[in-house]
Length: 198
Image (cartoon, rainbow, N blue to C red; front, side):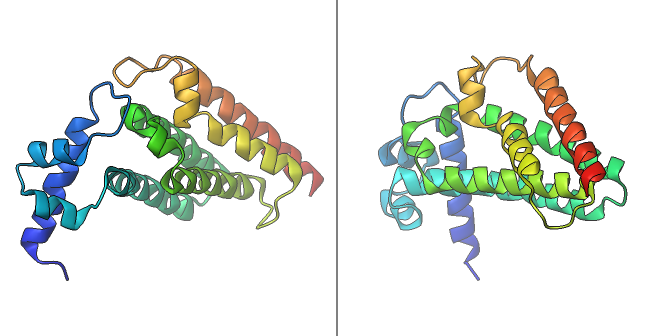
C-alpha cells in the first residue's frame, strides 16, 4: 500500500498536469513545468513520472477508467432494452464531454499516437458494442452490421473527430445533441434490423 505522502504527491502532480493542459497547448508540458506547477521537488516528480508521456497516459487513464466503469455498471444493471439504450446515450454524452474537456491534451501528437489513446478507443468500442448486442438481444455474436454501427457510433465523441468538426476545449459543444441523436438513430436502426434477422 502506498504511503499517504506518496499518494498526496502523485495527486499534486496530476493537478499540476491538469492545470497545465487547460489552456491551448500544442505540446505536452515539460517535466520542468510540472515541477514548478506542483511545488514539489524535481526528484519527487521524476520518481512518480519519468517523462511527460507517462504522466499524460496516467492522467488520461484515470479519467477514462472512471467513465468506462460507470458505463459498464449501468449496462450491467439495465434490465430492459430501453434502460440499455438510455445507458448508451448517457455514456455517449459523458464520453464526448470528457474528450472535449481534455481536447488540448488528447489531440497533442504525443497522446494521439500513444497506447493510452488506443486503449481508450478500444474501451469505447467495447462499451458501444455491448450496448448494441444487449439492445438487439444477440448475445456475444458480432455480425457485420453491428460492427459497422459500433464504429460509427463510437466515433461521434472521439477527440480527433471533435477537433475535425471545429470544436475547441474552451467553446460550447453545440453539435453534441445532433451528433448523439444521429448515433442513437443508428443504434435503433441496426438493433431493430438484427432483432428481425436473428
